[in-house]
Image (cartoon, rainbow, N blue to C red):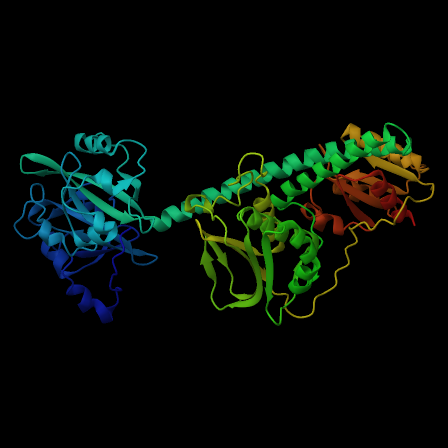
Length: 601
């Protein structure tokens, strides 16, 4: 809708409305005309009481040339419309000058001061005339004899074909969204074309509306939808990989138990185990991007965190790059997962190093910032409040403007093939967002790049939260134990490994491939079970659901939940189940047996 500032319809300002030179009618929700000013009454007359009696056809579209019924007969007008309130709207009628025939002469000079950008085009797309609002919107590039294709782009087909269809009346869609060719700023416009007769030759009137904000919101929505879809895909892939890696590393652990270091196969098994762990780390990056990894937040001081990490960071940057740190004298505490935060910082420092192949300086600056008003940038709103900010600056090659907003997308990289996975920044993005923070990037080609992270300050005294769901296994393997374990896992390779691992430690293991099978097993009242070890996500009934049902008859049984998804996905449900802990996949033989041992002792 056009941005025309109306005078509110109140008795105290009715005289101001009456004196407006622009014809205006105020219309209620039902279409009844509530008010007309003197300029409108002069054009329309006094007897028209509703929209259907005023306009020849409905509905009306702002920015189009249409016919109205007036006291002197039908005449053409340009329609401008704005919302003026919850139950009414103001419609402006933009008439030609007195005595002019709008079908043949729009009286262009009289339109110079109208608050709507208008361009008059010849049949070939040449600019014949324009008003001041159009000149302001399109910038210095707008001039007579210019072609419309020089002013805007992005239609998806030839602008000349679009104009031909408009002249021939073949257009189904009355308006199009186009991007202006201005180099100083990015502006989108919604363009409506209207055919007129200019003497013997037809012409077109282009009515423009600034649609930059609308396109920005559309792009933000599309980007969020895309990131959400990729996040769901990454989380699902990571879940399936975690099951596979649990089976691979688990059976490798079983083989290692039967081989000592002098065995020729021992080194091969160690290689398999190490590569499975590397794969698990890559899956962890996917989970970090999709914000589905399990975080272990704690109260942190950024100065101390960076101090602990400085030695490693100096090794990462090498000899040609200098790393300097600058801290706010008094840094407020934040709450974050230290290990994940260190991964974010290492990713940013490594990227900064790679951007300066000839050497340079990486500057890390931390400070406490207070936002008095919400910060709006990069289609994100940072709420007002106190934040600890971390800046990682370099003087490297920089990132081109057209790639800047893509750097957080998974598998997008500015490095050459083989030099990066494209997951580093997307992982950092996922970790920061899951922590409740924000991350932004500024860059200029040839002058360097700056990443800035915002973490909310932890106000007041931090509350220590007991996380019963976090397994804290003891060092080393437990001694042989006894006890009866009901193992419920739908993935056969994982179930086979877990069953063998627990039996090796002396436990009696009963297996079930589904929740329904587990409940069937528990129908035997004579059966004594000490621990349920169950997957969370399974076909049919999920883990927490069947466990709650089983505990009604067996309230003293302890529970170990295992899952390739993050604990946060079901943490609230699991927290309501007494004596339960969480073991994330992939887990090793030692992780599993220690967790079960700790549940029994």
